[in-house]
Length: 277
Image 1 (cartoon, rainbow, N blue to C red):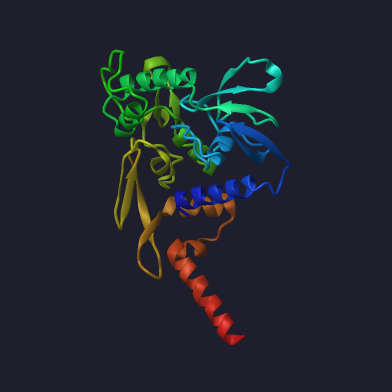
Image 2 (image 1 turned 30 degrees about the vertical axis):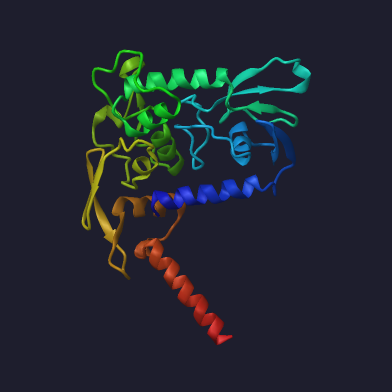
């Protein structure tokens, strides 16, 4: 089970929820467009349903909202507020029936420019950050650049997905300008299972790893790879297979086939059943 499977499952669940099959629906107006969204949703979901371009760096459907990057700030109001508005992080602000959302006012864009300006100072050479900055009209940071530039934007996606899967092998450490993502004592983390979920969810490609037909190395820890008994492809670490057997009750035999071959076997079985009938 690769992290891709986890992400795909989360996306399917999110889509099912957005269809409104579980809760009542409320009406939200986004940039003049009225949309219906489930009542337990956050404003960001309504914005995306309305087709509004709201940038995010710390948001992903596979994990709970975090509100770290603040790029998704929007302006909200209600008819009874008498013109008063609030600036909120759309990924964390719950929708309400009758809520009015503005995603591209000057106040909103100014806040996003300040946020991306600060990110450019920390990550001046990171392609994704530079691309988002140019889109907001910021070519260079107005702050002093970090003495040691990094691609880590401290979005917390890697630690959150690691916690969601179960190992909790990495975390945010230190404070202020020294804050970073690291395993305990910056040593190869004993709890890591080499699933690559942290590397695959990282929006900037900061987390590096090496993988081959025999081994995989990440966070300074090397893992033995297991091969699919059908196609021979190395697709999961021995530690990952053991972890899911221990924590999810998934038998080791299930890990004998990669996801692709499992689908092929299922399709072949279904075809045989159809022919038999």
